[in-house]
Amino acid sequence: MAITFLHAVSLFVLSVNLANCQSFIGVNYGQVADNLPPPSSTAKLLQSTSIQKVRLYGSDPAIIKALANTGVGIVIGAANGDIPGLASDPSFAKSWVGANVSPFYPASNIILITVGNEVLTSGEQGLISQLVPAIQNVQNALNSASLGGKIKVSTVHSMAVLKQSEPPSSGSFDPGFGDVMKGLLGFNNATGSPFAINPYPYFAYRSDPRPETLAFCLFQPNEGRLDTNTNIKYMNMFDAQVDAIRSALDSMGFKGVEIVVAETGWPYKGDDNEVGPSVENAKAYNGNLIAHLRSMVGTPLMPGKSVDTYLFALYDENLKPGPGSERAFGLFKPDLTMAYDVGLSKSSQCINLT
Image 1 (tube, one colour):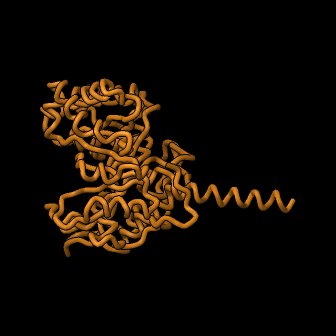
Image 2 (tube, rainbow, N blue to C red):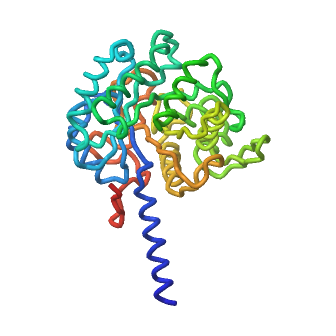
Image 3 (tube, rainbow, N blue to C red):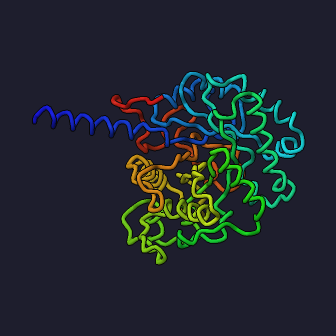
C-alpha cells in the first residue's frame, strides 16, 4: 500500500508540474519602444519562464530567428495596412508567406498568423470588407507552401464586436458585422483556427470603478454576479467576458470554434487621473489569472480546460501614445528583471513539454 500511495503522490506532483508548464500561457511582445533588449536576450528570458508562446504584432525576422529551436510557439501578424494587398493579390499573399514564414519554419515554431488587429471595430469599411479575402489568400498561400495543416490563420477582435455581453449567456455579436462575421466564423470553423479576442477586465473596471468591481476583476473574494438565465454565479470578470464570447459563437452555430485570448493585462502605473493602474493591482490580476489558468478549472461554459491566453505584455513600450498606462503593461524591464513577480519563473521541477 505504501508504494501505491507514494506512486499516487508522485503522479500528483508530476501533474501539478505539467500544469504549471503547459502551453496555454503566452505573452505579447510589442515593439513600440526604443530601449528593448536584443532578440537573443529575449529568447533566453522566455526560456527561463513557463511562458511557452509569444505573440508578435508583425513578423520581425530577427525575433523569429532568435526563437528558433526553443520550442516556443510563435504568433506572427500581418498589419492592417497589408490587408488590401493580401485581399486583392494572391501573389502578394504568396510572397508574404515566402518572406515571413517559409524561411523560418519549422525551426521557428510559428503556430498562428493573425491578419489584422481589431479590424471589425476600426470603422474602416474598406479593410472590413477585405478582411475575409485577405485571410483566405494567406491560407491559400500556406497551402501552396505545404504548410496549410501546420500553421493556422485568424484575426484578432476587441470585445466591442459584442452587442451584448451581460449576462454572459446573452452574449451576441453586433449584427452590423453581419456577413463579414459569418464569413470569418465559417473560415475559423472550416480550418480549425481560433477566434481571437482581447478581453480586458481593466477597462471594465475603469468604466465602473467600485470596490466590488475591482475585486471581481482581480479574481479576489467578492459576492459574484449571477447569470439569471443559467443560474451560474460568475466570480471573476475574465470568465464572464470569455463566456460572453462563447455564448455569441454558440448562438451563431459555431460551437466547435475555439477561443484564444490574444491580449489581456493590467498596467502597473499610469497618470494621476487614471483609475486602476498600480503594481498591487497588476500583480493581483496577472498573478491570479495565471493561477486560474493553471488550475485548469476553466470557465463555467468551458469547464476543465484553459483557453490559450497571451498576457499583455512582455515589456513596456515607451513610445506608445496615449495615457501613461499605455506604456506600463510590461511584466519585465528592458534589463530583463521582473517588473513584479506573477509566478512565471520556471521551477527546477518544471517539465518542458515541447
